[in-house]
Amino acid sequence: MNKKDLAQKIIVLRGKNGWTQQELAEMCGTTQRTVAAWETERSIPRKAMLVRIARVFGLPDEYFLTEVTQDTAGSDFVAEFSDLLEQQTGLSHSKKAELLDQVIKTLNK
Image 1: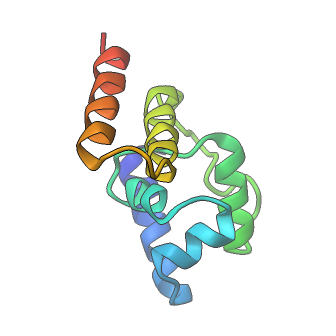
Image 2: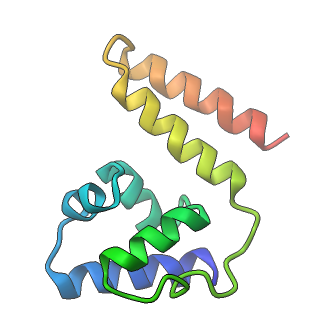
């Protein structure tokens, strides 16, 4: 399953349940920002999270695992790093953006 298909499935399922991104995030143990990244194809969750998402929607564990591409380690890391930066209140928004840009550049080398 590619990013676009995964994003669409999450959007549709979330909509059918009438949940906000924040509500889905809380049920999955992540942040709204991460859910938004999934839905805008900026990130694909790791396999363990895909299983958790399936369970939240009451679907079989392997629902999202079919043909999940394995080139997602970098995007997973960026999403998690972004979440960590978001939690750090001592950093300015511009410093958070600067650090995230450096991480992305490093991953793209």
